[in-house]
Length: 213
Image (cartoon, rainbow, N blue to C red; front, top):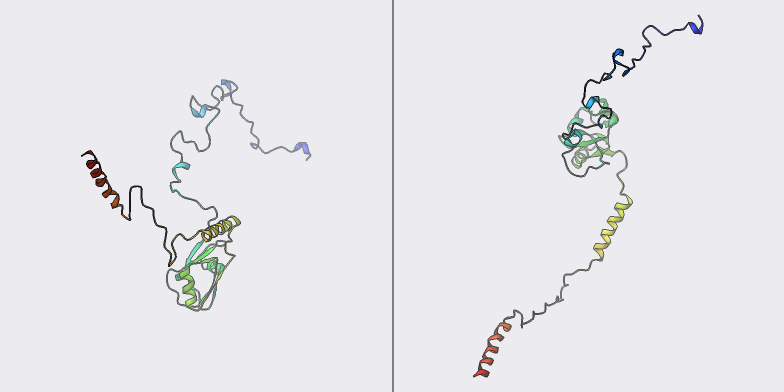
């Protein structure tokens, strides 16, 4: 056998049908697109377009609020599930995955639902306060994997600026032994309550009456 004797298997290479080359070809005139309509046009429509109705991408996000892109998502394990481990054993992500409580490769957070009746050394990525207290109350230990989140320079600068502004603000309230500022009486008022100003008006009227008489 030589190179020119090699041929593809029967039916492996099919000749492509040419469309739009006359009615005798079997794919002429409308070229397999049918009569008029959206599918017969060449432009088509953009991805996600649903004919003018409210598309799915806009119907779904109904919940408002800020979405934190750096949110940590944990696999939750309650301390009531830790009863299957023997007393004094070490419980980490590998042991939890082997027991079928979590999936491999996910971060684990231990919560305090339920009761714990044995001493365990638990290693996880996060703990709730009640879970930490329950584990340590039985003589166990708690180990957090990874470092806590650090405060960025912008957030630290904003906190420092807030603190300095609060320290620089003067205290407006008078100290003990000091008398605060006294409000001056309004125009036409004499004395603390301004009653003398009202009494002056009839005296002025009496003086005008005596002059006329």
